Length: 192
Image 1 (cartoon, rainbow, N blue to C red):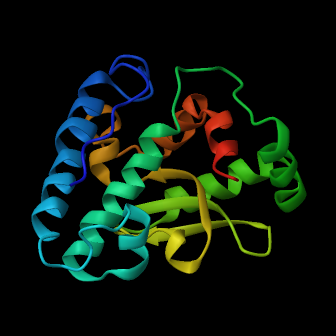
Image 2: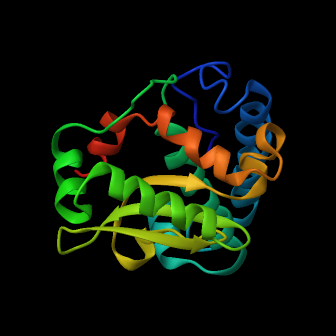
């Protein structure tokens, strides 16, 4: 049985980027529904003793959709910290971003453009490929780069429920403010 993750910050801590109301609905209700749905689907599925990552890599249909959304949301919510102005990566993750995208600003620009340009509902990811290079990908619905053997590092949820209460149809504004709450130390830990 899977449970709803506990956030390492309070519902108020991400404001004004993500409001307490949005966090309450998105984490407390939306993600909880995926957890409940997956737990109900697991009986006699063959995945009862599998990790979330194993389920996402091997399943399909409703089980995949719910497991994928749990994994995606867990990685999304756990990568945040209180607002920090001029928030930039340091250490190994900064080195890799500079190597593969020339600069943090170039990386941020490409990631932001892909986030603004993803049609419909989905996620944009920074992931580490098997060859050690970084990749930015647009993933529809519950997809995650883990299904291609990549290690997911950073993500933005561009489903409307992630930002609509705070930004309505202004996805670009949500994306711009998103960068100030990234916990780059958490992103770097995912390299391992």
